[in-house]
Amino acid sequence: MNFFKQRLGLRIVSLSATSLLCLFLASVMAPQGLSNGWLKKKPSVVLQASTTTITYPCAPNWHSRSGSCPSTADLQVDLTAIAKDFNKQPLYAYTVAGGRVVGEGSKVTWDLSGLWPGFYTATVEVQDNKKHRILSSVIVKIVHCYDCVDAFMCPPILVTCYDEVMAGTPVTCKVWVGPWPDPITYEWSARDSSGVDRSGRISGRDTSISIPTNGLGGKSVYATVEVNGLDPSCGRTASSSTIVKP
Image 1 (cartoon, one colour):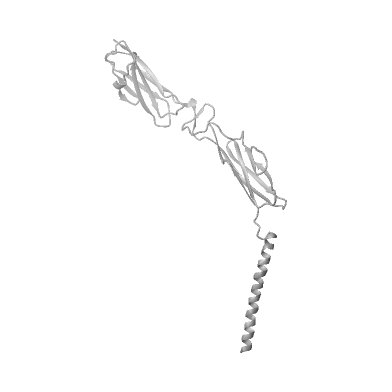
Image 2: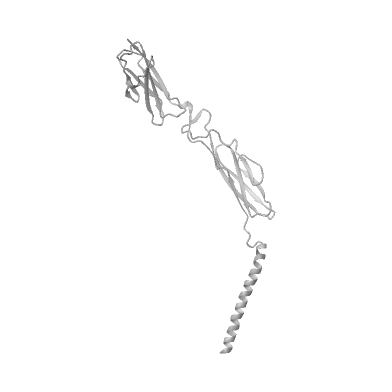
């Protein structure tokens, strides 16, 4: 019985010694393993652009309805290649689907001048003397501004009033506005030929009004309407006049 205990004890001691030896070898070999690249990270690269969307301004004789369109477009995009874990100084090579690349190295400029709206891709290839070769790409979108309208498409505004009336007869005025997709409202004003404001005497609303002429014999009445809701680039007022006979 003692013999077996002794054999068992020796085996336990032997196993413990072996475990200690393995731990010792692992601690000695670990730095060597790191130096041989066992745990070295794989090289990587990420290509970044200073912007990924370029919006063209409205064409000549066109205007932005909301005023949100840019007045100019910057077609120079900065590209930055962020490379990690390459050996020594890596080499950078760029290819683009449109435009041209200006500069070299990890930071360059992508000139997209003269390109039509669309999607354009820039790709960088990074290499080192250890034959590592990694690619990364970025896409830049060129678009037209979404709410440009033709300035020559502004609706016409026409105001008509009676040519002449007898004093005491109200002047009737009407306004007609050409087709326009958005809701519009009308704001009327009036004055006589001596410069007196007659807006407070206007009756009616929207497209048709009436202006009293009591006491205005021998003068003229001028009616003006301002149409609200049109594009800011469009004309919004129109006028007409009526002679008031005594």
